[in-house]
Length: 310
Image (cartoon, rainbow, N blue to C red; front, side, top):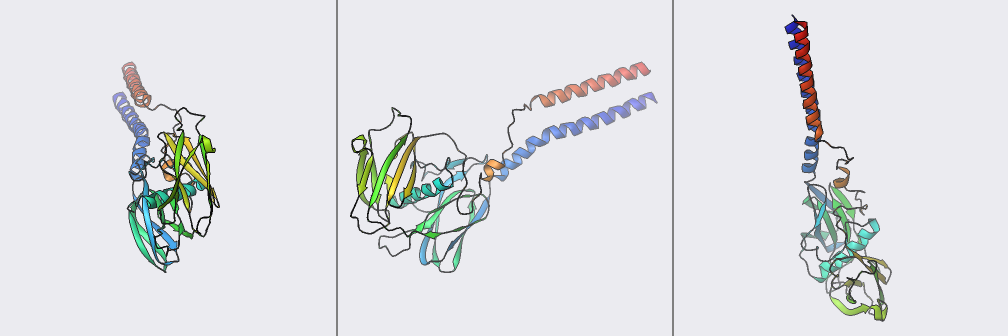
């Protein structure tokens, strides 16, 4: 009878230990599932009520399985910061990237011709960061659109808005955010781009002209200002108020996680951030060891009790 009771107690103990081991393993299993789930496909629907216009779609960054982002080969060398940008900064970044893509005649991932129905869908896109806009032509017979930037991690719908700002002058300021780094170049070259991306003029900014230049008496147009080549080790961001541009070079950081909200229906803190399991500093490796030690102690205790009862 006593042996039967001991065996029963041992069976119950083993069941409890199996349950404990399962609880220990589950958190790691769920983390793997979350990482795998970070990869998928989604649709991007664009609202644009213009007819006979060309919408172009560019993939700016790929989403990694851990939720981080990596710029694509087409856009990695422009130095435009999209990973540490808030919503407004992302809008400005999209304008810069669209200007570079048009200037350098980058091939879009996809494009379509509008028919006036108002809704157009780019289907089965891999998760990632995308930019969509209406491509202007040399003939100037298109309606320019404000570029839209999205972190696509689910089906999304965005609205394309026309770019109506026409000007006859442009001003540009160069700002350095680098704590007077010794790596700062003595000068940089900026370009004034026409609506179709062609270069209208180039100017050199330096301390001699206080990192400032102004174009005046231009033909009416929708101009953009970009840096010809961003210095190594720096990222580029921009802001614009009507005809005045401010181009800022900042020492690069190594962040690969989008930090801000995304415009046009995007989510704050894309799921790549929210799906991560918080790291609280708790160490998991001692758990199996402690569990095994506890199990061994319980067996020894049962054996001693069995010996005593006999």
